[in-house]
Image 1 (cartoon, rainbow, N blue to C red):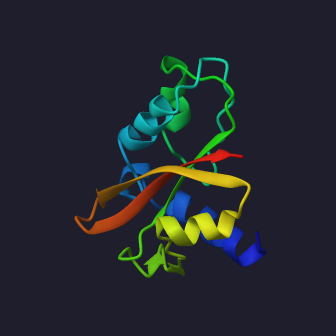
Image 2: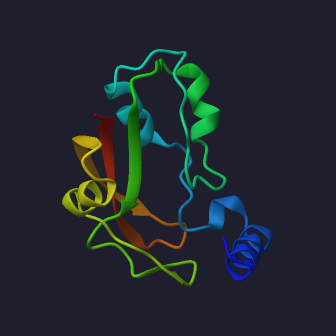
Amino acid sequence: MTDVRKAHWERVYRDNRLEAVSWHQASPTLSLELIAASGLGTDARVLDVGGGACRLVDALPDRHLSPQGQVIIAAFAPDGPDRCSNLPVVRYSAETLAETLGEKFRLFETRAERHRTPSGASQSFLYHRFCRR
């Protein structure tokens, strides 16, 4: 991460309450549903990439997980915002994300979510569950 981006995110977290940032969710419901759908057991390792101050790690001890080589990736949908916290974003469809990941991963499912930000804006996300081949 560049020093400029690092300073940007440190400023965002310093100057805003967690509940006020646009990506805040009181509960990571869709992520937990996708983890449950993977059939993993309680000894699985889960990596929460780019979670920021996400509450997913707090909810995992109550879930059943086991190693199966699966990954869940949430990304802005093709009709999602152009920017997040004043930074440009990359938007993905299921097809473009699968292409980005390459042949080593097979797409199991994709689910759409309309996230309501604390300011009342609606943002379109897609959650994708992949399995490593």
